[in-house]
Length: 285
Image 1 (cartoon, helix red, strand yellow):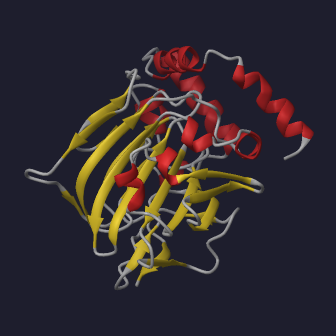
Image 2 (cartoon, helix red, strand yellow; image 1 turned 135 degrees about the vertical axis):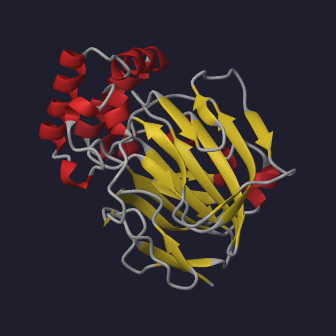
C-alpha cells in the first residue's frame, strides 16, 4: 500500500456511495440518443473496448448505455474449455488474488486478509463448506465483458444478498481498504458441483448500479437493511458449465470459492494475470 493509494481512497469513506450509484443507474438507463451515444463512444475510446467482439457493433443500436455495457458477444468468441474436470473462468478480467483459504482467511492484497465467514454474511454453516479450500478473485474493468458464467455445471442451492458499502474495487482501493470484499454489498450464489460446494460471490462497487442473476433478475437495488437469503431446495435449478448465471450492470469483482482438496488452480493463475471467459483456470481433483 502506497501513500498515493491511501490518498486516492480516503475520499471514498465520505462519499454518499449508494446515492451516487442511484444517480449512475439513472444515467446509464437514459435513452436520449445524443447522451447515450456520446457516453458509449467515450468509454470505448478511453478504455479501448473491442467492439469487433460484440454481437452488435453499432453503438446507435443500443437502447441505453447499460444495454451496451452488458452487451452480448458473438457466438464462439469465448470458447469454454471442455477438458474433463476443467474449471472455466467465469468472466473476462484480471486476477486480483488466487490460492488457498488458510485459517478461514482469503488474501485480499499484500498484508490484508478477510474471512470467508464475513464474506458469506456471517453464517458459520456456509463458511464451513469452504474451510481450508481454494479461492480466486477476478476484477472486471470497464472494457471487459460484464456477463458472468458458470465455471462448472452446478445445481443452485441458495442465494444470499448481503448489504454493505460500495467502495471502488480497483487495485488502489483493494490495496488500501481493509476487508474490502467483505464490506461491500454483494450477492452470493451457492451451488453443488462435481467438485463439491462452489460459491460465486458477486461484489458490488461504486457506480455498480445493480447485480442480477438469470434465475432471479435484479437482486439489488433495492439495498435491503439486512441480509436476505433465498433457498432453492425444491425444483432446484441446474446451470451448465459456461452458461450465463448473472451480470454486473457496471463493472466489479467476482470471487469463486471451492472446498478443501476439491480443485487445483493452474500454476500461472496469480495476481495480475488476464483471463478470458471460458479459459481453463483449474481442474477438479
